[in-house]
Image 1 (cartoon, rainbow, N blue to C red):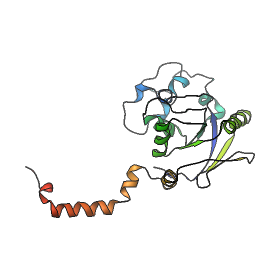
Image 2: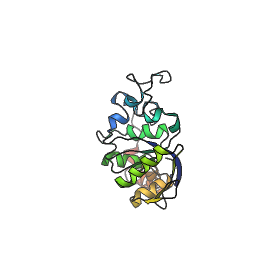
Image 3: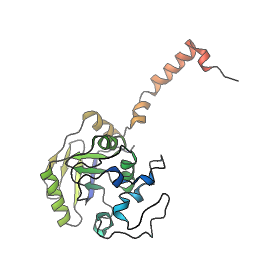
Image 4: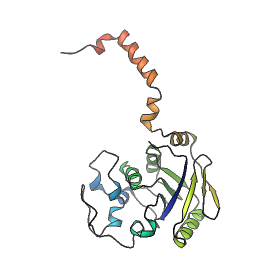
Length: 215
């Protein structure tokens, strides 16, 4: 998992509340357990005029011109702002996979669904809760100024606007440490690799029949 320390990124404003995980990545794309390849189908029903299918070439599909991610000014955005209760619905981990694969590193909203919120941290995304007034300011400013970018400092727990306004956010200390060091569940386990190996060697000595070759 990529470490997250300091990120400056173009903002894409998704002016919707209660965005559920089926809207983020529709159910027909949940057939793969790989973490990559989902970005082209992120917000599929909002981005395209037709119904997408797994492994489909999306380059020639008809786009919904008014959707934010289809607008030229938001190409390359890596910070997504949305309204309350983002990520509600099912617990599919494909939702943060799709956001990450598209290129987003930060999601800002007034509130998140709990399971989605937890899944973001496990996959290198930083979900940030700001007040509705602060999020409204970000919507207003990002829609008014092309090229609007935010500076996100995880160590300092701050979001800074182009004009210098600084918003503080809360983050659990353990989750913060994992993101700063790029540690997912596997990475955390591998930190104890020597202890695990030592335990396995002792088990081989005390219970050798468990490791005997079976023919």
